[in-house]
Length: 390
Image 1 (cartoon, one colour):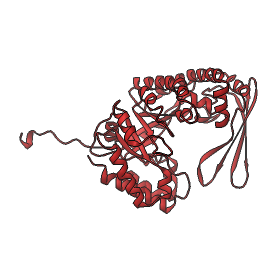
Image 2 (spheres, rainbow, N blue to C red):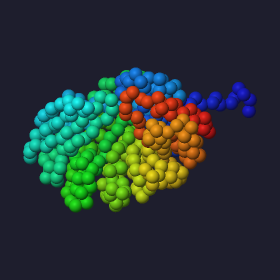
Image 3 (cartoon, rainbow, N blue to C red):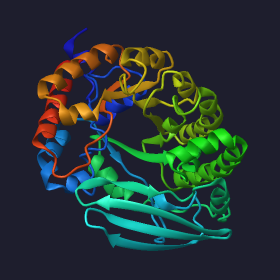
C-alpha cells in the first residue's frame, strides 16, 4: 500500500481516550484521571485555591479530565443535595449557623407534617468537606416523619452546561453524580443506627427504599430530560457491602435500583460508572449485573478485599472498565519513589487489554496542599505517562 493511500492515524484526545476505556478498548495509552482534581472547570473548588494552582496546571496539561457537574435545583430554598428525600416540596426548614471556634456549625430544623426533625453539620475553613454531626433521623418513627413530606418532582436548570462544555471541549468528559435510593435512605441515620434499622426492621427499611426509589427514578428522568452529559456516577452502594451487611442485602437493596437507573441512563446515550469503596469481592459479580460501564475506586487490600488483577479479570469478561486504584493515603504520606513503584505495579495488574483508567481512590481536601502531596501527584502523573503506553 502506498503512503498516499494509507489511512491517517487517529488523533487521541482525552475525550476519545476515556470513551475507548469506558468501552473496554485499548487507546494509545492508559488514561490518567485525577478524580475530583478536575482541571477543566474554572469554578471548581480546586481551581480556585492558590496553593493548588501549579498542580492543576500540570493536570490540565498531561491528564484526562472528568469534570464533575450536575444541573442545579431551580429553587433557592436549598441546594440539590439537601432536597428532602428527593422532593422539591417547599417543606419549612429553619437554619441557624454558629461559629464554635474551630468549626462553623449549622443546625437545621425541618417541620414535617408528622413533627419536627433536626440535623447538625459542621465545616472548617481549611478542609473541603462537611461533617454530619447529627443526622435527621434517630429512630424509625422519625423516618416516618421524613417520609411524610409530600413528594414534588425535582426541577433542574442546565443553563451553566454550555460554559462547562466549552471549557472541557475534547480534553475530557462531563460527569454527574447521583445517589442510589438505598444510600439516600440509609443516610437519614448515622451509620450505626442505619445498620441496626436494616437488620432489626428490614421490612420497614425496604418500604422506605421503595418509596425513595420511585422518587429517584422520576427525578433522574427529569434530569435527563433537562440535559444529558457524558457519564453518570452512581454513589452509595458501599453502605451495603460486607462486613457491614451481608451480600443478600446488596442484592435486595442495591442491584434492582441501580440496574433500573443504569438502563434509563443508557437509553439516553450516556455511560454509567458505579462508585463503591471497600470490600467488593463478594458483591462484584452483582455490581457487574447492573450493566454499569465502569467501577471505581477498587481499593487494594487491606482496605479492599480483592486484588486489582482479579477485579480487572472479572470486569474484563463483561467489558466493564476499571478505575483506580492508587490510594489517597499513599499520595499524602508516601514518597515519590513509592508512588512510582505503585503505579508500575498497578499497570502490571490492570493495563493489559485496555479498559483501565489510572486514578486515585480519593482527592485531598485540605488547604494549602502540602508540598509532599503535590510532589507525589507529580510523580503519579509522570509514572502514568511513562508506563501507560500501549
